[in-house]
Length: 247
Image (tube, rainbow, N blue to C red; front, side, top):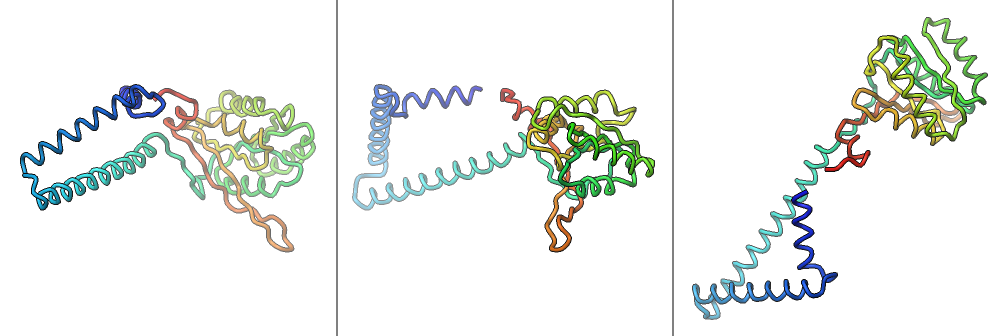
């Protein structure tokens, strides 16, 4: 906050948006420059070769000063970015005990891949399904019930309701984990509409909650072939930045 106020104060004297203060600042800088020049000449002398020496030394000092400021700015930005937030883009995440995922009418290969990837440790699956996807969700429940995984269907009011999607994901974390930790759960946003996806992401903006996405590529004569999921995770400082917390 102090740095911001200081920069604003200097801006009053060195920005053309404030003409009177800008002229005053320019005149004062000119006077200071002339005084410094006179002092240098009085100390080193005003012979031409001495003036050349003063010019070269001044140019070198200016160059070094600009280089130092530029380097400090670059490194400061790098370290600030690292300290403000950390965004994990991690292939092959650790298998989880719980999976939250969307049910899609147009595709299910990504969901099958997500479930099979976590199958070694998977105990619970929550399927978020709109009214149009209830039939497919029921089919998935029947199929995966045979594997011993407990599958629950969480109804969504409609596919464009971001707030409701966020609330349903949060309700799973707060009410339905049955003793599992939030770190044991991962939320897959692959099969949802954009509002559903954003709602899930907003619900997982805490250090303990993780997201995943199942990438896929089109293979001729085979269609879309999903790959292993990629984990995405936000840390606490980034959450504060996204929420507009004061610096």
